Length: 247
Image (cartoon, rainbow, N blue to C red; front, side):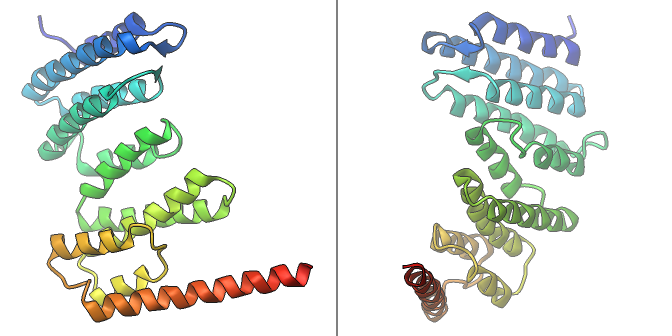
């Protein structure tokens, strides 16, 4: 019997109904949920992908991802494995770049769901996939714009620790995307001065390794750190002065 996208959508709902009690999946049921969902995704990838129905396959992968991410559960590693299966399915669609589901449409889905649609740790998978894919010039610029918007959003919500972390992370993602765009190294170094030190060195090292450009020359790195240090000293002194004036 040939299964349709509707059959797989119904199948996902049935699997979650089977293992969910009062909106929660108990620890003892997480393995069953994982196994059944993985089996469904592998079958859908073979069936729909084999028939060239990449738009429908992407729909099923995204439904499975969102359903998993919006279901509370006491899992022990099942999320990571299931997410890897979903990423494999996304890759099948991405590599096909089918006219009905081109990279641009995939991109729009990803950025459209980094908006609180799923719990924050599931958003991480969306960020990671976005960073490693969509390398066309038009989409690279869209990614830069998207990351900058997230940075502005985080800076506007200083009382939200996750948004602050998101803004910091997006600064690093801008650096990686600038490297993908083959921007001049001087421009990358200049931008890096405004990025917090968290993971900065690792990100610059990744750019050097992936792009083969010497962003971590000793003199450049020392200069960058010294500049960041000077800026931090200025900010700290300003804060101390403001505090003393209040006394």
